[in-house]
Picture 1 (cartoon, rainbow, N blue to C red):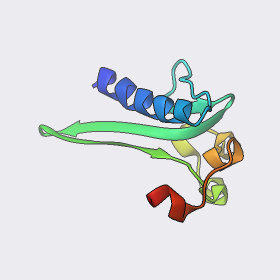
Picture 2 (cartoon, rainbow, N blue to C red):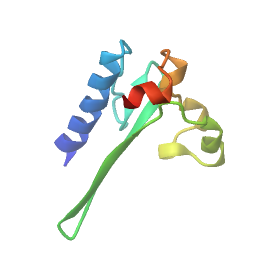
Picture 3 (cartoon, rainbow, N blue to C red):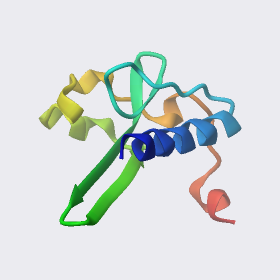
Picture 4 (tube, one colour):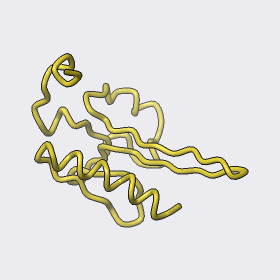
Length: 96
């Protein structure tokens, strides 16, 4: 499971690299970081031989929602979004 979690992080790191953004892991923490800020959360759980897994990449997310809780046990200010690190195409162009 640990390896699968790291593989999911690697997928996000490779997607960021395609956009010329350096995504990294931080020792002892899950997810993907841009510098000192967390841009993606990753989770894996197994119960009774069923897995739940996935990641949330903050692309153009409204980060104010993070102020109401401690994301992954971290301070809300640690969260970032891709839109603050690279110019993104309008949403309609991303779909085409």
